Each structure stands twice: as structure tokens, then as C-alpha cells.
Image: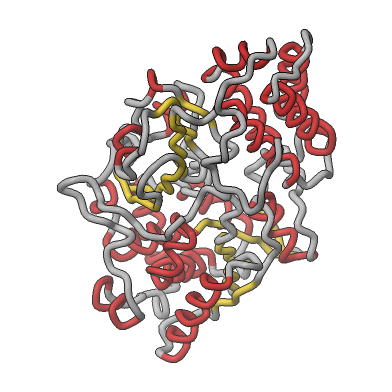
Length: 426
């Protein structure tokens, strides 16, 4: 998939992607980074107030209000670490790559503002092994910032393993702290993360880029885009059966079908995968749903990591779902029951259905396993897989009925239109 943004909707301009370039061009477009001499309570409170007024929510998957996450970090104490999550373990996502190759200074500025707010003394940028072009772009940007004394706090680049689960925030902090890329069980997700005994605050690249603009311009320009209850823009990677896959920047609340059309589907569309491989399939009756938290929740979906995959009429939705389930099972941390046993079993059930080899108990067994897994993992990885499979069972119910009776559709052996790091067999 090319890492190229597409045209914004008519009459709109890019907020995040509109001013690519080196540090000089970045400063010409956005002005200086004003945190070096502004570490005082008045400045802190002003920026906290701006973030609260902006309504910015996390763009990494959880959609958690940024201001609340900041309050929790401030309560945890100072002299901690700001972690820039650029892991992008989701195979269908390209927005981290695009941001860090096109506007790295915007992301790094967001980390600097956040560090100043939290009085952190370390910034760590996490780019996985294998994403070498991204790491090169960020190293160049960091060198520019050092040469021009632009960054008050040194920006450190680290290279965690390139695994789906490695980008989960507790797994990422655990790797920085111990070298073990495994999620940490947290019954209360409001519990602060720590590296050693010091607090760690994790944000993804898009959230930090928005934060950098809000810190400079105030909440107004951000709130002028999107919906009243959910303002701003979002970066979404569109792929699948489309002529022009890539990353688009759209207002929150843009209908799903309007987003998909920006990439020009190449055939009639039977479903959209919204939110990534831990997201949900959405059928045509819901294509007009606004891309925003509450409307998506009403149809059993979520914005997730900012992904829409277009599934054309010549693809088998059950087979594609079985491929995703197998991929998620292979990418699990294998440290709790749902990941160790549940995900492989569900992937096997779906693969048998896709091949038309299910037995009379296949569907009942699959539903039973999904119910046993939900909410019981150390992290949300199994929950995402459960949601994905349940949505497939609903959206592709007619096809699944045929498959379960041994009548496979003509497309079940077709090549996948989804992106995976390596071939996934069904």
C-alpha cells in the first residue's frame, strides 16, 4: 500500500498533513515550540484547559479523552517518561508511517508539550524493528532539532519487536522497562503505567500531532472541524478492494461510505471492516453511519485504530474473517487462557466453516467459545478478536449458513484483499 494521503473532502483542508517539510518549513508553518521557558503552573493550566476545551480523544484505538489521561498522569507524579507509540502493529494501518515520514516535527512537538506539562525528563519514540524508512525519517528529524536546539528534551528512538501485540500500551512500557514485550494485567485501566518506579504516559502519533496544534493555536481550530460532540479530524487508512488505497484525513462524523469512496472501490461493496483487525464488519444498511464514537457504538463498531477495509462482492467475507482470526491467534502474547487456547480454537472453527467442513455443532461451539473468552484476557486482544468474529457471523450470516452445510461460496479460494505481513492459510 502506498503511504500517500488522498484528497480531503471538498471545501476542507488537511490539519495534520497540510505542511510537510524540514524543520525550517515546519516552523514557518506552525511557529516556534514555546515550552523551553514556560514550565510554570499558569502555562500548564492554560494548556490543560485548552485540551479539555478541544474535546480531543485518543486516536490510537481507545478514544479515551486526552485531558483525563493527562490528569491521571499528572497525579502519578513528575520526572517520568513520555512514550510515543509509533508501533502500528495493525497490518491495515499506514497513518503512523505517513505522519512520521511527512510531518515528524509535529509529532515530536506534541511529545515535547506533553513532557513539559507532566514535567517528564525522558521522551522515547517507539518504532518497531523492520520499519527502517520510518526510523530513518525520525532520526533525521531528531538530528535537525538537536542541531537547531529546537527540542528542550532529548528524543530517544528505540526499536521494539514488530508484533501486533507489542503496540498495546502496557506491553510497550513493559518492553522498555524489562525487555519483555508482553501486556500487563490491569483490571483498572486508569492505573498509571510505570517504567521502574516512575510514571509513563503513552500516546500514539496522531494524538500527539493534534496536541501540538492545539498547544499552539488553542482549541478553536480543532473544534471547528468534525461534530459538536466529537470534534476534530481523523486519519484513516482505507484499503481492500479499492483503486487508490492510502491514508485520508476526514472530519469526525463523516459517513463511512463517503470515506470509503475517497479510495474508489473497484466493484460493488458487500461490507466495510471498521476499526482494524480487532474491529467489526459493517453491512450496507449501516454505510451511512457517521465515523464517530457514539454512532459507531450503536451499530456494534468503533473507530479503533483508524482503518476501513473495503470488501468487494467477489470476496468471501467468512474466509477473510477466518484469515484475520488466524492472524490474531498467531500474534497473541500466549500468556492467558483466551489467547493460548481460545483464539486458536476460534480460528480453527472459522477455517473449517470456510472450507465447508463444519459439523452440526460448529456454530453452537463457536458461539460458546466466544462467550467464554470475552472480557477474560490480560489485555483487550482477545476481546477485539471476539468482536470481529461476532460481527462476521452477523454480517455474513447467509454465506455462513451455506458454508456450514457444506456449500462453500465460489470465492472462498480467492486471494485475500486484506494486508498481512505474510501469507495466512485457511
